[in-house]
Length: 144
Image (cartoon, rainbow, N blue to C red; front, side, top):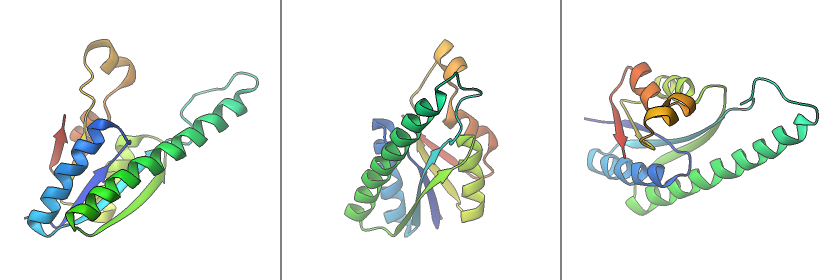
């Protein structure tokens, strides 16, 4: 049924649960797993004076977080005995990047975690999972 599963990760507990589900599905269906973490290289509209230091700090932390999230997902894939590849995507707009990568990879399923934000948090912070659900042309399995 599924041959190529895309697993976006941000290194969170929710992403770890999604990795377990994605690995289980990949094993059951003999699917390959594509693990991605998206770093928005310019997350702010403008920087105050000295903002270059803030951007450098953000990018260093984002790179480290991406590496840790991918390493955890790779460990889950290895433990499950499924084939995987992993990439850090450095693109603006995580949801759009995930959907575009799913299309380029030929994914027939996206499995991702959700923080379950509601109310003002959802309005202010947005929901990558909700945006992926809206934009994706393939099924999206959201793990809470």
